[in-house]
Image 1 (cartoon, rainbow, N blue to C red):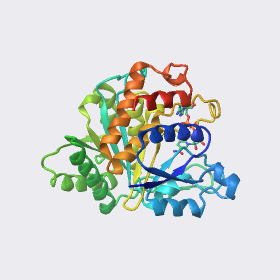
Image 2 (image 1 turned 30 degrees about the horizontal axis):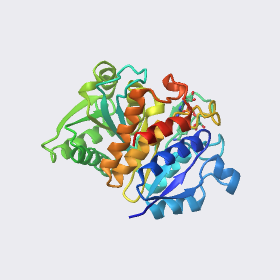
Image 3 (image 1 turned 90 degrees about the vertical axis):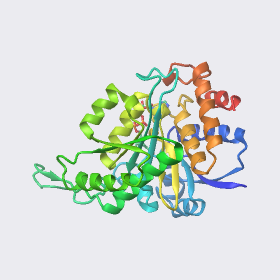
Image 4 (image 1 turned 120 degrees about the vertical axis):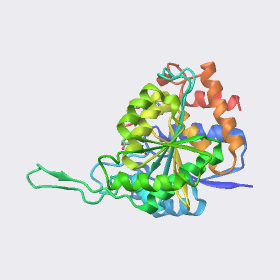
Length: 335
Ligand code: NAD
């Protein structure tokens, strides 16, 4: 059956890594059809707006988007186009796997396999209650945590563990100090955990979690946490296994899901063929999981790993001298 996905080629290195990713997907002959839509600077130049209604309509219709990074111009009234997309489609779960890969010059070339499930709509990122006094001396910010928001993200993490055979969930919080927000999140997490007796659940304070991640990352399996902690921890996890060039992310809601690379538009290397396409390719693997094709997703990940192992056409960030498309072709050749 043909599945149509919305494809956003994005800004900076976006078009290069998207072309590379689509080349790899085409090689797999999955019957995917691409509907191209614009967002970011590319959309501004073509349509005079950063996030055209036609793009939102395409994502709504297809329910799945593969998206390259976008530039949010400074001072345009948007805090970020990505945040706007998450809000519009209520993409409440940000799912970021971090797995050791060979030949990546990372601190942990083996032994790390962590999925961070970050609450994506609440917490410190609600954009409300931000104020600064006229003299610039005092700033405030509001955080919001709800039972509904906490329950659905913790349940998502436990369901993910159940579906993918993962054994342990770590609930990361700061309820000792943030007694209301983190306190409510932890209380709800305990209630949900009780409904999944076959999955081990432990609790960890966020500062200790950061230290433990750096010292003994192999103790973690799935981490579930609130928005700000998840933002920081998922980047920390990406750093453990080789950096942003290998870090994919999924933003998942009830009615739509957007798959992407975690990194930005990398303006310093844009247009030079130097960008590592792996993060977006691994984002496409997450998309295949979501589309109910876990075998194909695994096949794609194995081709990426085999290419890294062979050091075939790796991009300069991984110490090679390949270019973006050569790296993609090397992956495609192994499929
Ligand atoms: P960045 O991730 O674009 O770049 C940070 C560093 O990592 C740069 O040195 C860059 O060359 C390198 N890098 C990133 N991706 C790479 C890849 N695939 N291969 C090789 N090297 C890579 O972060 P930044 O410089 O802070 O942000 C640049 C722009 O990207 C900003 O406009 C920002 O708003 C935007 N951004 C977009 C997203 C998104 O759309 N998801 C996320 C983050 C930043």
